[in-house]
Image (cartoon, rainbow, N blue to C red; front, side, top):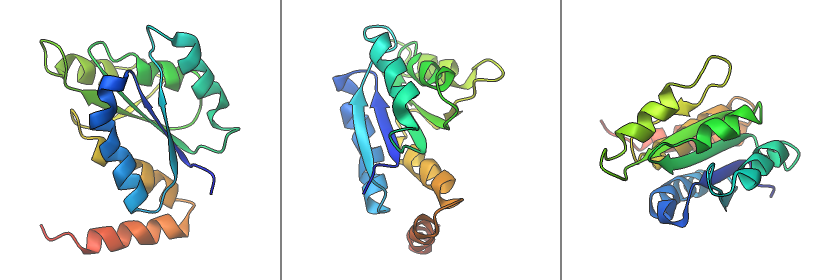
Length: 150
């Protein structure tokens, strides 16, 4: 099965947070592929991931980053696919800087943003986007939500 979601993190140190997105996607039966690319240290790699995402079959990109959190915006600037940002708690501001970087994107380059370290919600939002055109994902979401009590 072709991966439908690209999960991109700014550095290896973000993997612990971002694995929650991968686990949630897998629980919903959604295939994904992970990448490490930094908007600052490896910008060409980040741009390449965004530019090639659609032709590789991805439908949504989840991007996690801390500190200045430029990664989700860089990816969004180079694709028309939806980008869901995960601000990662790091540095002296504990993720507030990352959160503000993601939610304050300029008009025309949106990044849907979840709470700090909430990669699981990013995966659920990606699933909701996929469910618009994928009945299997929609049913998986319904089953998951049917198990929630409160």
